[in-house]
Length: 106
Length: 214
Image (cartoon, rainbow over all chains, first blue to last red; front, top):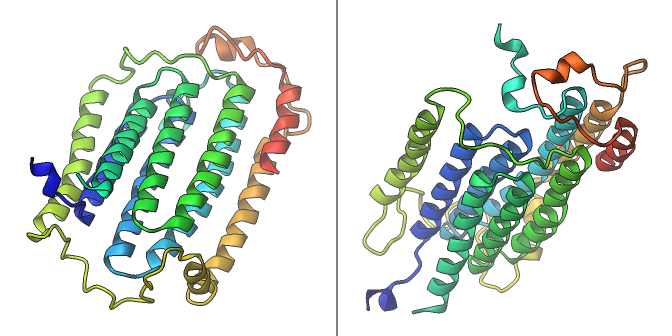
């Protein structure tokens, strides 16, 4: 069988990460619920961290893993502020979706 | 079949399945649980790539804190109603989103596969070990990450703490109710949006918001 001789190369991880990124991006564009949109952003961030770790191993440089730590912190801050916004919006308009926030549309 | 291949295939399948679950779930709670599956899959892949510290942080911070925060807000606001995914609010949006998604997938794929040599190594990233601090061959690289984090990346680390303080203060300000703002929601405001308003009174939401921000 061909699989027996196959080894996992860094390219595999990069392809998986780009698939995760694309799924997250499509979800962000398609979904209406602001919470689910945030989850899709988390998916995209995870795809990027996976890429960083892969490159870190490929290039034998621990800096890539340090960047992932920063990405985690920024993601946490983003979620805190984003969920605060969602709470503030939904308190004013229960059941609001992304479509209802079109005040700036002109 | 080697162990690494097996681990990659299973963890990758969990990742992709969870990601699809996030996108297609009607219920936000199910989406959050699918997100947990993806995060665990990524954590397993981190272990497979010798990033043990990041795998632990991934599980603790992401699955332990961020997803719980999501679930907390979902339960708090009562927005766990199922969303109708069969109707398209903007005509042609799904098709455009699919095109953009395919483009987002195709661009990195072309970049990766066109620069992959016969051994499967990506060659467009520069030489191995010429940048920064080379990793030493050891099982746990926590000390190594700590050393680099507090020397080369010290400024970024300090800025990160400022960012966190700003985020916390911002969340507190966002969830604070302006003095004199009415608690009740105007009937005409919700009539065209959604027939069922939030069940919980807003006072309890306020108390719990302060907890989230903290």
